[in-house]
Length: 186
Length: 440
Image (tube, rainbow over all chains, first blue to last red):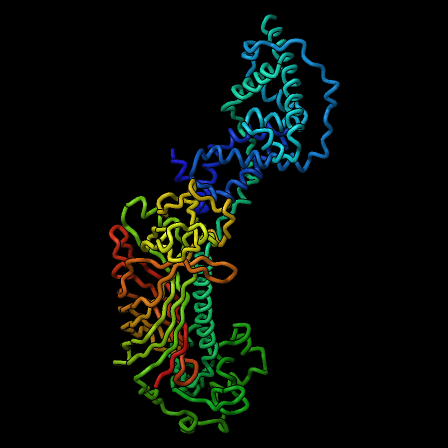
């Protein structure tokens, strides 16, 4: 398997084969990121497509420092955020006051039965602004200050959105776990 | 409560870690056409070379086609038997002289003649005779049917059956001029002014990874050469040429970003802040206002101002360019031998020789808004280099002693530009010299 450095050099020279090799190697992981940030498959495809074009165009600026996959992931996430910002005003956010607190949080062991595909489905059901903040904070590791700058909201809103996202996720994870248990127990 | 909620973060983080989903195939199909090859100056040079070759070939074909079409109007025409063989027409013959038309025509058409410069040149004078092209290139190609059916073409019969009032054989001599040898040209010297865009690159056979990497980050930039040449013709085919040429070439060092305004942060006044390794040699910044960052490799720049020590963005330095230009200029004294392969309206020559090249300019700069920001100069460059060249020259004699020249030339440098160990790279170049020459 060719080294990533050679593939990058090939891409920089405009070599089609290396471009495709790079895409084939990393697109499954990056497509999962796109799905995680989008509410539907079409939007995820758009993010992946635009993100990869940016990756090829900006490859010359990659400094060979740190993880190349991390660098690409950052570009994909930024592309997803651009999409989010452009569509933000179109989204209708559920009234959080109508979402009841879960009676009891399921044990961590209960989550063990959930597969990645289930978690992905749950996360994609979140309203966009909760999903975006949750992804950036819990999965990408950004602080509320950084998130507030990235998607132009206040730090307080970021914290609030994260909190509400967690409530929804806990409830839905609980439902999934319950359903799975019932299915398994017959 | 917060701690319990934070637990859900871990569930998703761990659960989605390494998760992969194969994207639909149409995504790549949409990406592929958008991601185009990076356009480089090399492409432009190749295109220019291709256009030059195509133009010269087209011009050649055009000239040849004109010459073919104008055969009846040429000053000197010799019609051999092959010229009329494609028209095996059973033409009538005189009853009294049972000989074939071919043999009857032979004495007539094998002679060389020079027609008067009239609007339409005829084979023989007389209103009832046809033009040469009418006889040998009849419209419709079926000469026999024309001959039989078209009364207007009865003159054709007359060509082969002259009447009494037409020209007799003894009169023909007045119509033809004797064949004379073209006067030999006596000009021995030629002076020419030539200019050429050139594509310049390096030839490296080694397997050193760093050198290969250096070369991969370097792109040739627009180069040119031009000058005055003198040639002496030794004999009809061989001539020796020398002269004085000026050539300028260089390369782009991509990925090295230059910033200006560094002087206030330069704590080591007078020292050279950046050492940059290129395939042509090492250069040092002699401009303390310049700050350099290599965004492509860790092997090219040596400096105490590393990125973890100094951040040009925080210092608010002025961005200049994301690449540097390394440029060299030479004065060249060539000795070139020229052998004439074809001596016609367009001459073809084979050209080959050696050249002594003296380095007259050596600079590295960053380009900004059409201007140049001097960075330094390459160390260890040889003042004198030797190059060999081979080429194919075309020369079109368009007016008296003046000619147009087109000369694609490949040049290989016999000794490397730089004596730095490990960087003994031999450059080569390809150029198409064009210009005007005057014989005297």
